[in-house]
Image (cartoon, rainbow, N blue to C red; front, side, top):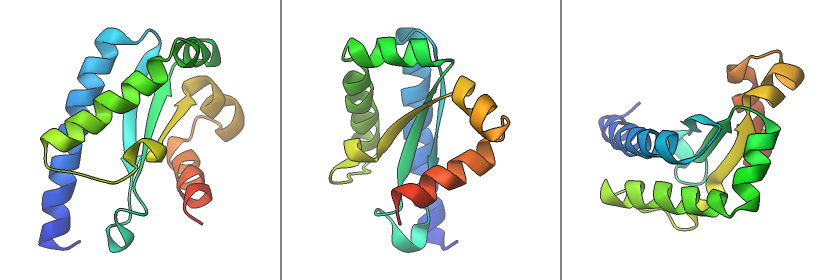
Length: 121
């Protein structure tokens, strides 16, 4: 990883940490978020995944337009840290602990790799 990549990663982590802390207070069932990126193909390879506890919580959030509000909040935090990515909202996905447990045996590393590959092939 180049020095510039490390600096960008640090800024992304700071922005997403702030977004996560806010989301934990606002969205019922929201648990955490993460990102996947290959800096050799950034920003095309950049994906953010927001994790809810179960499908019911996720569907409730999405049905009340909270999903769009969460995407807007994440975009705002990224912008605050000078990370401006055109169409970033399209790069924000949602998933659940419940789905990971049943479909991927609870192995988030494997699941995120699959999401990343499917998203950017």
